[in-house]
Image 1: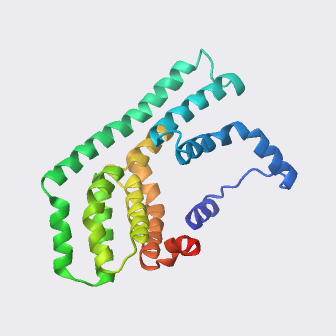
Image 2: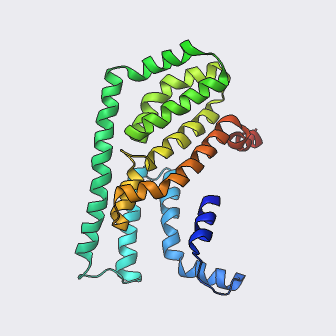
Image 3: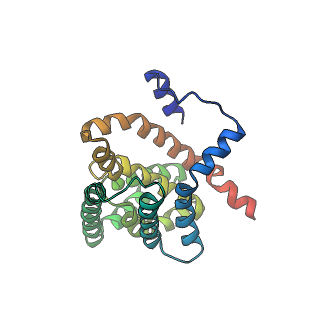
Length: 241
């Protein structure tokens, strides 16, 4: 948020000047009711046990199509083909990247690279601070080449015993891993979000990557805070106890 604010101030980006009140907020909320149903369908379906995340994505996409055609009427017979083509182009980039990342993850597993790295970490030091730092570096490097889900499945069973041994709570470690691998979405060469942004904005990857650098550095600062201040990710579980 701070980086976005500084960017906006530097480039003199401003929002639309309009009246801000409970009445205008309520009107905007009501106008957006059909769009706001998408997260309700996704999260409600998943947490309600009605569908898997993949099924929830498919249902929400179909819901968006119905709303676009029959309610907002922005999709019609003239532009629906182009909509499908744009969606396929964007999805194809992500699917190919995930396929290659999954293959790379399988190769790493076959060669037992994560096991060797874990053994190497423990052989260097038993300090909690340095072990967490090395794990962060490992996850940042892995996240640039491997799809996040594959990295979680492969690395969690290897790294979890190590962090538990030095006194890190599993929930805390889970948050560290997710934040770490989230950075992989905006780091080349397998930065899925960079490819999607490049396709949507019609800009070169080099330009998108350069613009994302300040945000990347900000996320690394957040990662270090989450890593070394457990209360940030543990205050909710502690309240539930």
